[in-house]
Amino acid sequence: MKIIVLKETEPLETRVALIPAAVKKLVDMKAEVSVESGAGLEAGATDAEYEAAGASVSSDRAGLLAGADLLASVGCPTEETLRALREGATVIAHVRPFDAPSRLAPAIARRQKVLAMEMVPRSTIAQKMDALSSQANLAGYAAVVVATERLTRILPMMTTPAGTISPAKVFIIGAGVAGLQAIATARRLGARVEAFDVRAEVEEQIRSLGAKFVKFDLGETGGTAQGYAKQLTEEQLRKQRELMGKQCAGADVVITTAQVFGRKAPQLVTTEMVRQMRPGSVVVDMAVESGGNVECSKLNEEVLIEGVRVVGIGNLARHVPVPASQMYASNIVNLIAHFWNKEAAEIRYPLEDEIMKSCLIISNGEVLNDTVRNLMG
Image (cartoon, rainbow, N blue to C red; front, top):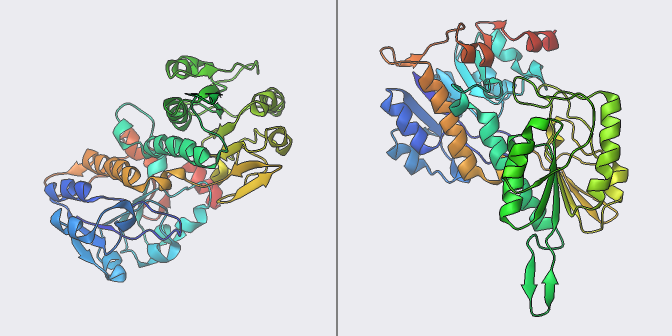
């Protein structure tokens, strides 16, 4: 099986789908790996390192696509890339199938298989393939670093001959993978951290990281089978915003991480709530790519609201491309290895397997996922 890795086409993307260590594992499995020249540079991987790992390196992008059995990618390949990819080939990527499913039309026309990394189930056996979690973990860390860089004060308490500086207060909304890592990072940097999540069961996790769990009585809430918070009613959202406004007003940093899988992110922080914060404070909206938790956030922009900086950087894992690529590449190799046929040196696609059934959304000209099929009409 010939596996290829190309330079990512999104302008802000810094990650690469496979690092040299991952390539070596695939080569040891008898796969043939080819890498487009320069594909890994922003993630700290040189062409020479790929060659040393057993890959061939080429600048002929069209040639690579025409001869590939499998394209490993971080982001969704463009329609042009899918049209150039060999008919019947496989794509493994974050394809964001619910956002713009029409982009995948060429994959259907060319009878390609599309394995969506964001659709890997959050089960014990699939944990090592869970790219959403691996990238969210790093994004949670990066969110705190981004906020700290922009904050007009320091995070830890500091005692000096000139006096004592009190610690900054960080309020984190949402305690999923990203939120918990943000809590841990802010605590390591010395901040006083408070966190809220609609799922009462995460209280113990929040407290174990040294943060205070903020309780709001919203009535019946809970989580989904995928580990996400369930969508709240409009009345619950209104009540949540009202109670949350007081918490935001007293915080130096607010980080929002709340997302509902496959749907627009809930708006939790209004512009009026931002105005109530102290000048010099920072808000980081980690859900900005899926609609945003903060009313005034803008994708890949920073907005000043009466001295409060609202940061809407999309996909914060890009800010740490070396570990992000390392973890993502490991997710991909683990997925391939799980379905690898050693004798034929190729991937199997057993739809009776829970993991394959979840993430194989297009195959042989058909859309297998009901939601994606309905969105495509």
